Image (cartoon, rainbow, N blue to C red; front, side, top):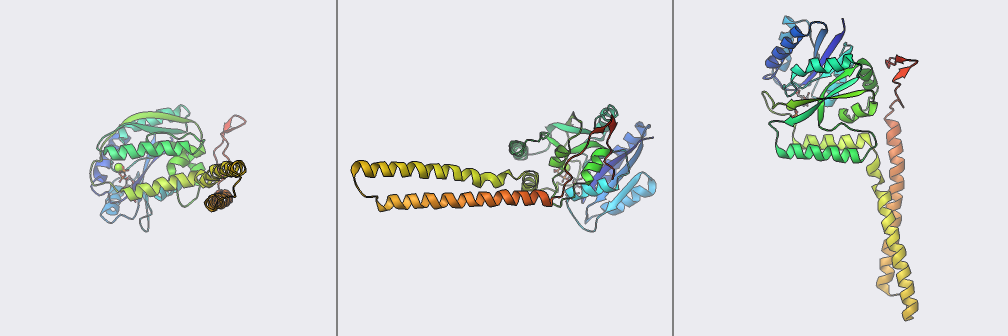
Length: 315
Ligand code: UDP
Ligand code: MG
């Protein structure tokens, strides 16, 4: 029987856990042709989350957990989940039931059809402010415009990943993680499933705008070095301005047969040196970008199939 690991990062989720477990248990009773594992990653919760998980494990062998020594953040909890999951595929879910477990059979169906990364796309987001919806939409736009790798819009972390995607993700061991961009980066066969995102069932969101901004910056900077290129691009108009102003001043001096004026010389000097400086910054940025990419130590590629056999990414 194939095994499915449901990975759930949990941080101060004592109120949501009992309801979450109930919904999952119902689901597991329905889907009988698979073995299930519910893997909680307790991300340094300060409330009774851990003892609730332990109690659930007493009742139900299928509940497993990884307990962190402190709060490391959801991204790190997710990679730990991947490291400890034993399933042939994993499903990421939030603890707050914003991702309906009832969608899981559909995810599994597409997995059985041969897709490696079945991700749930939100068709609506109930209980979230327009500002959050708007900023998240803009963020996808910006991220996509900075890179050539296609990024899935309006997807959270609710998705099913085949074992080989899990193994691929486990090879990306950088510390400032942005799962969203990593899911895109590894590639493989992706399939979209639409769903309605429910409001959080209990407790309060662990996110605030500072965390979201941090995540957004990590996402962009861990994914692409193109912001470093801003300098290089800025130097081009500066040098063009220098050139045209220089030609203009020389011609004016010749035509009116006057000497070059002090203010004109100053403008020319400013344009010249700022151009040189911006260009040098750009060059440093280019090298910095290369160092950055190399120090990530990522494998250079993953193989989808070899001689008709699916590559499993095992070491
Ligand atoms: N979470 C976590 N560590 C954190 C913050 C959040 O493991 O430092 C978990 C949280 O328990 C939940 C999931 O990440 O299962 C999503 O968090 P939340 O619902 O607060 O985020 P939102 O849905 O508002 O983006
Ligand atoms: Mg939530």
